[in-house]
Image (tube, rainbow, N blue to C red):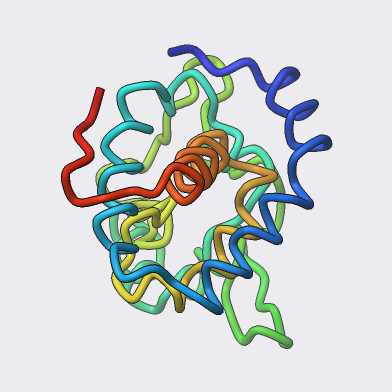
Length: 175
């Protein structure tokens, strides 16, 4: 399904607060079936969302670049890690992370919503939106942030809310 970012932004304004509250409750009192709920919601989300019709993560967010990412990407671009950092990255002293200097990401192609370094992209990008990270309760704070940027995360939270409300069981099957 093609993502309409204007419609998505309007939905975020309406539901962000209640979704964040839900994720906090889920974090504090996770149901015993939480990992099955997460996997079920993840499977359903990717039947409905096409990242290439969106690209909002690349437009509005920045990944964290690990030292391995910096070495791999700079080698791919035939640059030294130092030159790569000088040209493209900034060091966030608070988080102690290397991040993009600008948004949208310098490697993001607005014409087709594709990454020009996809094969060597940062690990953070490769795992985004991190919906099935294990020990999900330790990662819900990330989803609280990402619901305003990522339609897939937003949809995942909607599905998690519906399952919690309707009493998800291990017998629930994808539609």
